[in-house]
Length: 260
Image: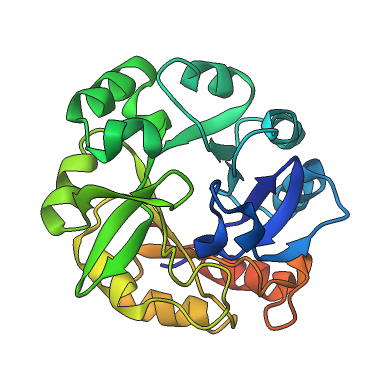
């Protein structure tokens, strides 16, 4: 059954909610920020711990976020996933710092070209059970193309049944932001969620466009309970007004007896 998973998005060391498609290093003036928290990253980690919001992720959006990320991990050791700049050279460091799993994208795509060897080597080094592959994507016509570098650069990988099957041999979980709708609160990409539900065989978290707590039931229906959902800008703990954190926790409690 679909569950609510939490997020902590870090930008310049602060917890923020950003419109995904606006995050561009070459044109920083285009950045659109929905929310900047007065609370620390560890505040959110403790909040998730107190409410048993497991499989939540901490994402470092660019440089200057390592200390903030480690503060969150230390607040709830071995329960939060971390992503952003993860490579084969630092993955073990982040696991040692308290991450339950590391999330990887850009490292797998040198020159925007997928490297199976990099995935195999990383999986072998840390174990597939500690690895999450982020296949966040942008829609191109009727397809979804995996995007890297804070969703600025399209890669040569398309989200397909074959891609999902291949990647799942080397990781234990998927994280997928629908970058075109991320941060807009205009609704989820229903077609993507339904597509994922047909083909994913490992735990999968979808992010992007969630605006009502009823979206949890919608994702549950569309994905046949195989895809989980995270809320960002719509959530009251991130300055939103249309989704209450307590309602998400209550949803999880109702689903707690059902396993993926």
